[in-house]
Image (cartoon, rainbow, N blue to C red):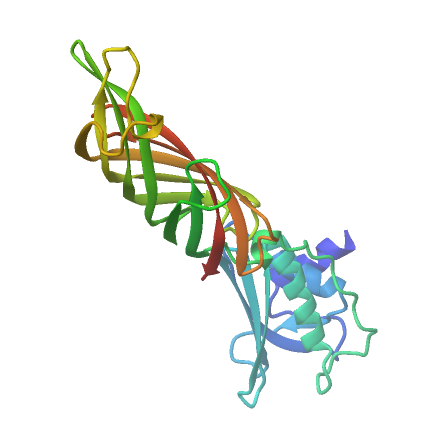
Length: 325
């Protein structure tokens, strides 16, 4: 109740002289958002931490204490500006996620300003620092705006040597990383083609390429995630040179890869293009905070093929990602 009485006296009777003759008179101005504590709580915090002062009436020569609190993306930011009679001004600032913590810290600043040498306030022991809520991790660290490029080798068939290459670049847009991808690899076909009642065997080799837009979440560019997902959509094209061989009279196939004479069958070039969609599951192999990290991935692609049918293919990917900000 004694503390409440002090606060009421300070706020309700700004021009009344305090009981002690040696307390300092100050002009106090307080500005804060509506969700913040009132001015009385700031005064109470300052008094609790050792401040002794009276509020000077308009026109009286006295130091000015301006307290301003503003709302920010990280919470609340408060400042105390102390202007002495000579016009010199000093300021202190504090930022916390809760406005109550800002007000309490500013109350400490007010008490410290009134206890500085040269004031008329009686000597008191230094006040203890009030408890302040720790800043959350997202307040201490900037948001992850990283993007970058990645180069990778592709394995679309079993073997030690890769048969394809891909290059991806992304930039952060909101919570998603958007960019583009270009990839190419060799392609082999060895499949049966049915044309009406006629069957033939198609064999050959060539190359495919795909060009698409990319949306990525997590690895391989994140500063925190070890795994991620990369989705694609675009155009896939291929050119394959080979031959078609019809069923022989003996009922067996005769083709390039079944021991027949080279060049047997009808020489054919298959060209195709179609839209495609793809998804890649990515795992980083080094700590995410490193600027350059190796990664592996497994990609599933759905697209059209040389026969005009839809087909699904799988590739294993391995590469390096460079992150930039």
